[in-house]
Picture 1 (cartoon, rainbow, N blue to C red):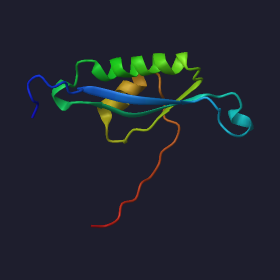
Picture 2: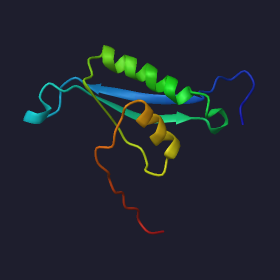
Picture 3: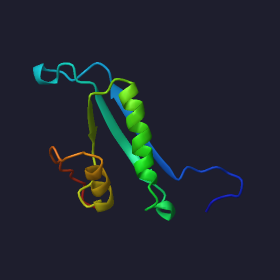
Picture 4: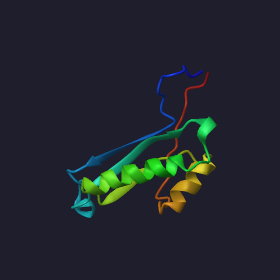
Length: 102
């Protein structure tokens, strides 16, 4: 529940740019922007907020010298997958996570 007069973010995200480059010969000269925690409050979804956050983060990453962008997204998060595809991201590989049985 939101308190009146208290500012609460409704869409957030982070990008970190590694200016050291990727190790190894195939990564020489790459400056990687890693996007994480792109989130929109469910009450405010479908209004272009995640796209706006990604745009602002990308502007920052480019100004910081990024030459490659990476992000992770769960395979069942179809709205996020559609957004990232529309922004030009493509699947590179998949991870598998294992959880301890409860």
